[in-house]
Length: 454
Image (cartoon, rainbow, N blue to C red; front, side, top):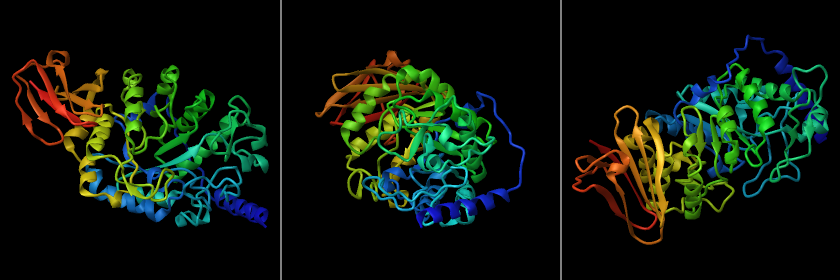
């Protein structure tokens, strides 16, 4: 019975696909993709709060909140994370024993209609994307690298080829260890490029603006990344590419910078202090790669209400203290990481909202250049950058230790002196300086973020 339903679904999807009018597709040059994310992308992702179970009404509720409260501050992406094509997934561990996949006749996943009702009649994510676009926002999805096992098992044809089927392009080598939906695509096999072309053609038709592709970074799948970059560039729609998860090897830094708009430096970041300090350590390798259009990615922001139906712990507000939350947002912002909020936006309290709507901090995130670490030692960290428009100097001071400590810098090391005007970006307080050094006594796990103007 299940087999009959599967092939009936394929027939129905094939009918609607064949009715679509043909159109001319624009192609982009190899470097044009960098113009699609000239500043670090900012948005919301469903993973931290809904895991693999998010539903359409929840996506819309987060889009509504963003349009009302965050859009004016530069937030714009709404991203549906993992396994939107599975009808019966559960939080707290993937249902891998009997997943009910939704897939078309060319082996391309489709949204599960029981979770995304607007996808009925073969419309995919088109109507949900339209809903988000009509609010002045952008729409994104998550996929796994590779080709679906169910497409291989049923020898489904690859669109754009002369008779090549899914079972002719796959390999079981380097299959994802933690999610077995897909097989590896062997990059040099006939039909491999065409398969990636076919899925990005579909995503462009739906109106996708952002794609997060999982299991690309560790180990680093150079061949598939190049297939993906080429497929995006010829799909006719600017689609920001985010590779995931980390740890992306630093040896691949130049390659990933050439092919992706953002790439993960670490595994998933959750709401514990060791996750933050580990991220600080890893960031040290990636400062030279911060550049317009290509951004090292600190991962999603695990603040607000998370794990409603998530993968780590029970439904909760973030376990990080307020000092630790300031530290996380300050690090992400001065480092110019993409900002992808992981909590359920409609559940935000006023404090969480204030972390996302500080105009001065977001100006630093947008306009900062020459980001670099001054030091990280003895439980102290200092990072600086400069506003590319005003010339103002930014300084972030962090106490990584478990006891109060003073963190200070010599002003001449950051291009300032004792006559500068100092403003605390989180409080708005103006601080006078009379010394050639500037510092602050910081509580354990706390930080300070300052703007210095001569």
